[in-house]
Amino acid sequence: MNILVLGGTRYFGKHMVQSLLKNGHNITIATRGQAKDDFGNQVNRLIVERTDPGSLKKAIHCRHYDVIYDNLAYCSNDVKHILDFADCDKYVMTSSTAVYNKHYNTREDEFNPKPRN
Image 1 (cartoon, rainbow, N blue to C red):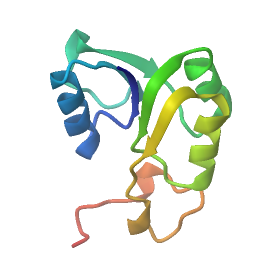
Image 2 (spheres, rainbow, N blue to C red):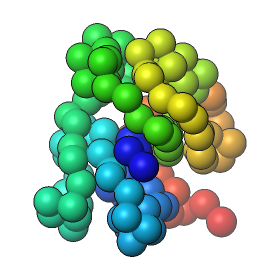
Image 3 (cartoon, helix red, strand yellow):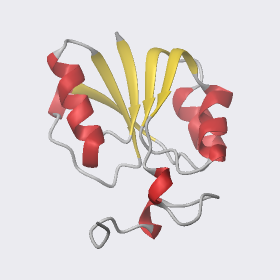
């Protein structure tokens, strides 16, 4: 399957990508390009700023994915912007948004998971 993963370079996303690769899927990671990954040429990469609708449109418009796994939806606008431009058969959102104190336009850099239990 042709799969797009948003959030595939850190935390549980990288483990998801490893598992998908082991099962023979064609994987594209949408990333800001700031975090290195160990996937080499096993994956395709799109450089995108997910909070910028123009950046999302440029990156994913006119591309079809069987599945989009979204591991970085911090607020409802993040989901809306993906679905505005995505062409996919299935969209799966897995997010840790429930651990954040605020849910409106939360950025990843606003949360440090280490001191939490």
